[in-house]
Image (cartoon, rainbow, N blue to C red; front, side, top):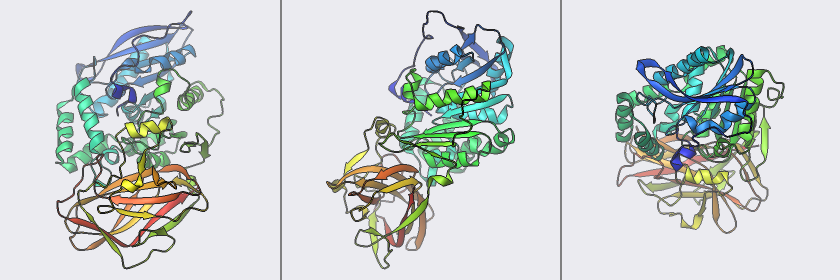
Amino acid sequence: MIALAGAAGGTVAAAPPASAAPAYDYREIAISSTGGVKLDGNVFVPRGKGPHPAIVFISSWTLEDHEYIAQAAKFAEKGYIVLSYTARGFFNSGGGIDVAGPDDWADGSRAIDWLESHTPVDRSRIGFAGISYGSGISQLVAAHDKRVAAVVAMDTWGDLVESLYANETRHMSAYAMLAITGRLTGRLSPASDRIINDFGANRNVPQLIKWGAVRSPGNYQAQLNARRVPIMISNSYGETLFAPNQVLRHFAGLTGPKRLDLSIGDHATAHATGVFGIPSRTWDDAHRWFDHYLTGRDNGIDREPPIAAEVAWSRKVERYRDVASMTGRTERLGLAGDGTLGAVAPAGWNRALPAGKDSAATAGIVIVSGGLQTFGIPNTLDTGRIDRRVAGVWSTPVLKAGKRLRGIPRLDLTVTASARTGTLVSYLYDVDAKGKGRLITHEATTLLRAVPGRAQRVPVRLQATSFDVPAGHRLMLVVDTKDPLYGDADVAGSTITVQAPSALDLPLG
């Protein structure tokens, strides 16, 4: 929910860009909303005769309404009314932070009311957009207000529960960042404060799940699909806040006009340059999306394959007709007792992992490690540093031919825990001849109801990827029990034993 610019600690701009002869008027505004709350905002209004199409931008977590000023001016130059507002509870907007709850949906509707009362807006051509926090709220407003005609959601989520609590594992680094920055730049509502405290303390989990479900756009697909709301989603493969699997599932369930842009990077990093007005593939597509669905421009975006996915490190963009077609076939590799990944899954082996031990394999630092990938700097590790005493490590032979990984790798593990709870973290690396590994993908999963001493199957869906492993390299799978990104359920002195049969399914394109 926090934009990269917010993580750096500041607003994007304080005034509209200057031009010799602006085609619009600009002013600061206040929007009255529910509970007597005033929302801080600004608006660009074209000087030409209306009615005009409009776009409403909602601020990211920890940012305010000037975040989109450069892009708003670009849209205004083309004849759009552009209203931006600071989400409630942040900076000069009143009320308490509702974390994309019903009060935030109502604020979006009040912004539309303001446009209708104060500008020559075309009521049938109003779009909503945002990065991160603003993107999720934009989808939720569209699900609850029929006046929203199109949406662009950047760095968004479909399932907030899975984003923060996937596989019953708390994403503690993401939680800490959101909680700390939210309190520094805003005011949590009493209900939000209670929920955030509960998450940190790992209590009242059923209530947490209900709270997150209300705030998940994927749970309102019936409303979005009934109106066939055109929705463009733009996310990153390396997201550590809103990881891609839940976004892919949400996108697959939308039946109206839709587009999915996937980039290499982390939360908001693929969109940061565009915020400052620098040319950007995803922001260019956002313009094309609104130009087509709000102004009727025949720019071809409706005829392109709906998915545009960047391949790691190549900057190549591949096109797909749907999520399923990203993967052409699946190759199963068995885990063996001698540490090999191969075509056969041998029986009769096991590998005991001590709980709560970090092997040095790592998913990195929230936003930072993945964000560097946007600029061509991979998350790397000398795989010789991995502590084999506390991790299971399996490698393929040197590849004679490269592998095109496209989609979601799946682990099918058999494990026996000595305690009722424990956590497993799985990493997939591309390893060169010198042992340097580039992290391809990873995932954490927690056992909360294990029967000590009894073997159980643990399916793990690693996060989706688009990655070419070169010939001459190896694939390496590492499984340990601790990573700084996650809150674990490990019991000191216990073990989790990985055993036969276990396998890794690779999605090949």
